[in-house]
Amino acid sequence: MATKQTRTAFGSLTQLKSGNWRARCTGPDGKRRSATFPTKSAARAWLAIQQADVVRKTWRAPEAGTRSVGSYADEYLARNDLRESTRGLYTSLWKHHLAEHWELVPVGDVTPAKVRAWHAQAVKTTGPTALAQSYRLLRSLLGVAVADEVIAANPCKLRNASTPKTARPSRSLTTREVQAIAGHLAQDVRTKRYAVLVLVLAFSGLRFGEATALRRSDVLDDCTRLLVERSVRYVGGRWAVGEPKTEAGRRSVALPPSVAAVLADHLEQYVPDSPDALVFSTASGGYLARSNWGQTFRRAAETCGLPPVRPHELRHTGATWAAQTGATTAELMRRLGHASPAAAMRYQHAVDHRDDEIARALDAVLTGTVRASTAR
Image (cartoon, rainbow, N blue to C red; front, side, top):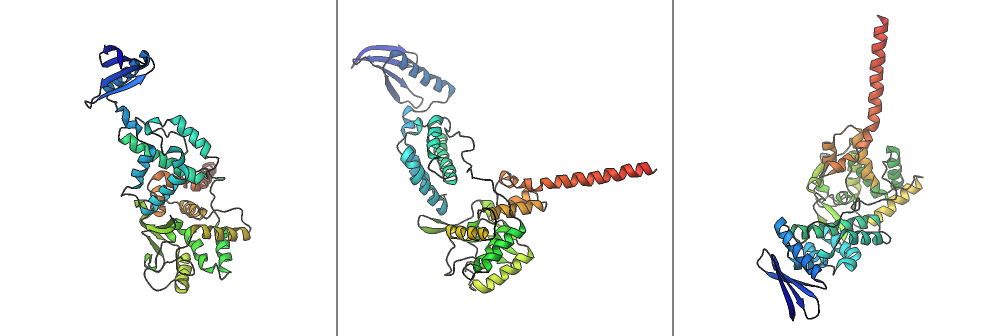
């Protein structure tokens, strides 16, 4: 019950029997709202903030920020525009890495400091890739709240948190190393069917999920070109086949004739005649699991005496080799299925040595010019 009331230009202040002060005002939406504070100055400050936000046209209903992050997650994961494999990945990330901490937190209470504290704790128990993916998902959820004008800005502001921090940078293999791994796999009847996969991944730059989703009908022009129209991923206990990672991922990729020749032999020996038959499959004709392939690949590389090699470095190798041929950024983007130049630019370092060659060629020109001038 009120004991004392003060009118202001933007609302009213009322002292309650408890000694607390209640501030009331009418928002731009015509609704009357109130908040209670222990002191009159705090109540007056709240009114001043509400009024300033109205003047700046940044006002938001105070109760809007009470919607939980978990509520936004439920809505986000139910979106119709998510690929099935993406939905499965996001659901897993939310369940295992985000829900426990953020499920009940109102979006209005999420601050950069709280995000930073969560990330500092999560890095101790979460792998770099899963942590980067989880951070990106959290940023996306809060981005929806920003778009809804529930919060003014996205509190996910950690620099480089969306990029996995690997134990070491990716390296490009040499042609001899790639051939050694493929050759070792070809010597064992249990792994012989995977030897050509090593060559295709390295010389095409395809993602693993793109290569293992290839069907016989996707191999064109006497095996010299691969049509990439789908990707496969194992999520939620089942195989999810969908479109490539980005729209740019839908493409055709040319293979060197020597690789095309061994691919043709592979089709003849291991792939049924059906147009839908998988080009790279298990012995039973099913999809090849990334984990099983990783173990097989790493064992082969170790046996060949190579330093630790990650399977994904075959794609990195293919991108680097393509850059070394003098391919432009646009050509690299198309070949690798990148949607932005930034991704393709990572491989431009591969042509740095060409600058040295140009300098030596210019020196030869200069030397020749000097000698010609001296001869006169």
